[in-house]
Image 1 (tube, rainbow, N blue to C red):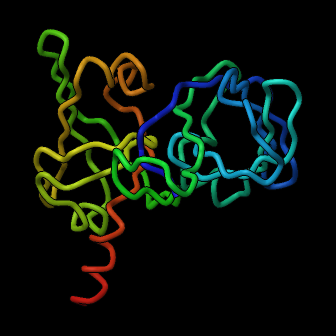
Image 2: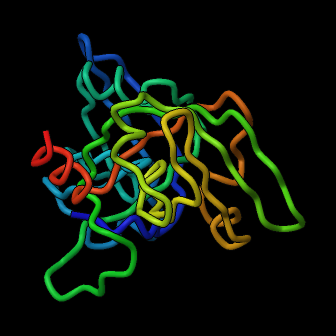
Length: 194
């Protein structure tokens, strides 16, 4: 379980094809402190398992499904991703409940910068859009955010300068794909209603 409060951005330093999957090594820097084999760490919101640790570098195995359904399959060496270590019992809950299970991808279709703030508009599959509501929660590349608007065509968010500077979201340009995880409560409500 995660909160969507990104702890930092980390760099992909190695990527090796392994059958239909890949092994990816990320330099976590200070975020590698106290990491153990088997730990769950969210990369761009996708929960991955640490399989090897070498200094500050942690290795992960990504299956074909993960590579196809997330933007992790498009990463190049040197790419930055948002990183969050999993919650521990007793940690403060600041964002919202994020499982690290990506529901699908969205595409940035418009970005409006207003001084140091930005407004982003994304398209996504209708099944995901119907799990969103204005002022509800969404995790975009692992970042817990509040929806401004949501309808059957698009959803929008407003980003503060801090989020733009400490996550990868500030680097997004029109056409970029992002990982989406809708609010878990919205999924259960939709399931009950249907």
